[in-house]
Every structure is written in C-alpha cells, then in structure tokens.
Image 1 (cartoon, rainbow, N blue to C red):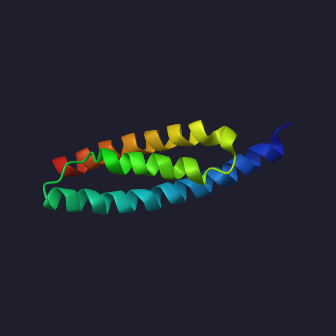
Image 2: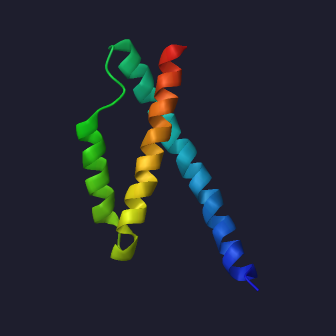
Length: 88
C-alpha cells in the first residue's frame, strides 16, 4: 500500500544520515576549537541566526515550524555532543 512512499523515505533517510555525519564532523572540529580556546558551547546569537536562516530556506511555508523544530533538536544533539567532547 505504501511501498513507493516508504521506499522514498528510506532513500531520503540514507541521505540524511550521510549529511548528519558530515555535519557532526564539522561539529567535532568546532568542539575542538572551543575547547582549545576555552569558549562556551552555547552561542545563542549563532543559534538564532541558524533558525532564522533555515526558516527562510524552507520553500513550503507550511513546514517552517517543523524545520525550526528539527534544527532546534539538531542543535540540542550537537551541544550535548560538544559537551561530551569537552569532557574527554
């Protein structure tokens, strides 16, 4: 019944994982630099800019709130990862 649609979601998920890993590679480097320079993990002005930017990148305006939610979750995950990196 949903074979085609689920196959599409599976393909998208595969791409998302690759993009997430690429993003986390960048986060790892940022965490290293912050640790070296004793900088705080949270940069609220940067987070605000990212959220504004991704809302603006959203073609389908019905998805704007969901895209913002997604990126809030991503930033929560990356801050937790950075914290863990700084503890090592």
